[in-house]
Length: 274
Image 1 (cartoon, rainbow, N blue to C red):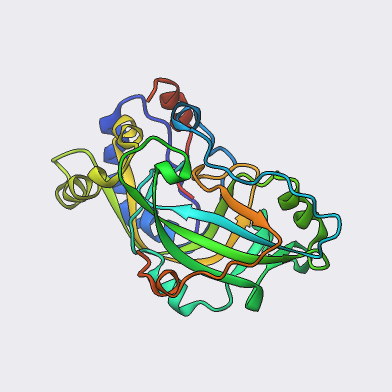
Image 2 (image 1 turned 90 degrees about the vertical axis):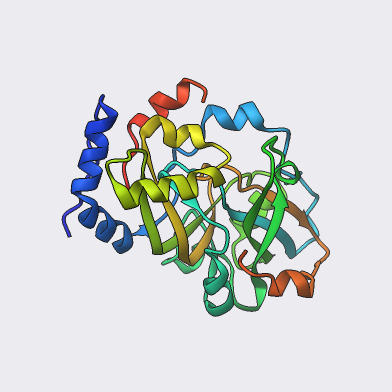
């Protein structure tokens, strides 16, 4: 499939017209690729609202061979740099069915040396957090895809040291889109406008979509892996804890249903659909 990039339009109406006229191609294209971090997920909104979510403080791991890491891989209800709004419940199926999910380094899921944890060393779950618990002043809650990983030094010494040193402050999910809908802020586009009105109120940063005039609502996705990354498409993905004591998730958690400032205008102007 030839990749169809979304051109830059000064006129929002022309952008919306392009999206609507190329909807089938864009939808097929989106479903055909593995979504990963694009490396430009950091924005001024991160600094404007952050109180200090990341708890990945350095620990003395000189005499340790294993670390127990709690990492937020993805959060819902925020429009990321792919213009995606993940809707609560999108991870339910994959958490229940995908037993081969990987915790890896920088989306390098095809390299043994990049695997951080898998199999019995990894529990993927979903958990609801208030935004304040994750260090942001947004109101309400988000549903996080969380990895509880046993990180072994002899498996990936480099990432063992990165977590021990408190350097991993962002994560990203490598995923396949399963169910998603184009949302357009224009009453001329019936179903797309209905989707806009339905899903936009769920976003804590609606100004991002209002600035561009569209976004994608993702209601189901398949997680292939979760990665430690320097910057993620969704920046509210911190390391919650790193320690030497294993803390098993509660039964309730394991069974839980997968449940602008002006600088953003320039930031999102050059984004492309992945």
